[in-house]
Length: 117
Image (cartoon, rainbow, N blue to C red; front, side):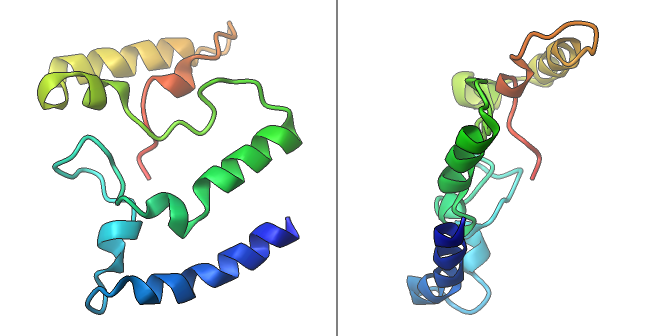
């Protein structure tokens, strides 16, 4: 954890060297849904918060076995032309809600969509 804290302290210094105009860093390092790509984040978003490091550390410390823990990609947006129709997104939400039902433990709900932020 101390190594991660040290690394997080270096991120603002590195971000300042991106060479972007003042206030534009969010475009490459922020969460920005919706946007014209299939990804809800700038291409350096994972670096900004050391996402993969934090996720992997959480997996180890929490002994998490879910294949979809920390999923940041929406399979509908990535897999369907145009990101999927409104109907497909409604269907996706219904399936996810069904998988989150407290009466059974499926463990696939995290795979159904990316977080909103």
